[in-house]
Length: 443
Image 1: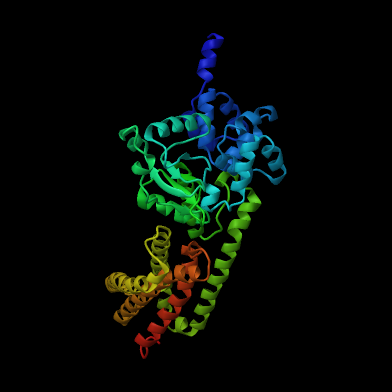
Image 2: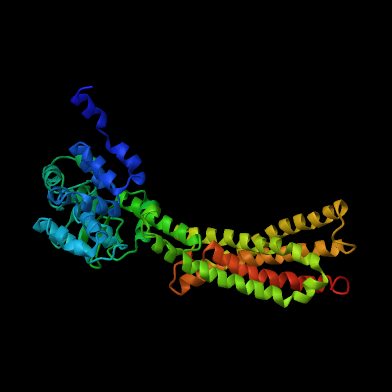
């Protein structure tokens, strides 16, 4: 095999590298990145997250960094600077040219999770008094010089105030001597520079847009957020919420890149809190020690009762948190949600209660371990399940509203957290029902 054939076999594509990327260590990533053609390498560099970009750039030889860093658009360069260690920021910043430094500095003034921190300050712009023919020529010049992507063209005045928007199709379809102001659409969907990234993502979802302009309080356009930027945001937000729902703090890096002690820190705190909560469950059981001693059979159903309450609560809190994230539910809807969950909990409780009663009834004829009062035990289980499931659904649906009311992330109302709360109330309810139903018989 000659050297030319060998070189051809070793060459990889950007798609190959993108598929293998999560499985490669840093050294392998640099080696494989170096095997890409220049054009594919540029496209690949622009497609990876800020964290991966930082890792790759810092692993490249110093003499290569300038050419790659200067390839980045301002928003990606800002993401890179935010992701690298503090001691490396200044050295990377000095690799940028002067116009880029000014743009990146302006972007870094915004919080990373705000529209201003997500936007690209480079966008296609026109004056309203231009003719269509002049506008097309001017856009061609902008595309060659500074624009990374062109989705829409924004019409602005001398103070940079946003006047309207026009698409390329509309420009090319219009008469050459028509004015841009006569072709543009004056109603433009925008986001504020301080809007949270979740709000920005909902604007994209609601209006099916490829780009949204970011404006300040006076209506001056500051930049645009593009759909590829918001896809990363949606993935990041969803990952964070899912991790919190698992009963832990959100990780700030991919799973395999999180250091061992950082992983312990993220998981240990919440696990300890949940453990302390379950200790209250043990204390609650101790309060009914005499009842359990008189009717040991009651202890057989404790796991069944508390798990049913926890599961129903986990379902409710997951549904409400997701509805909040999608903007389907607002704070003012809390009573509608709770009222709905009361009836849902009642129906689900009746379903599980009937199954529980049948379990006791049928099992009595197989093995009469429940004794002569098996029907009363079945009734106790049934009523307890109804009450516990209603308690679980109401608690699970209400807790996210309470957290948001106090300025906390609703995703903190994790499924294990809700289950721990419901475990205690479930035990209290179960033994309270038993003391009433079984009074004068087993108790």
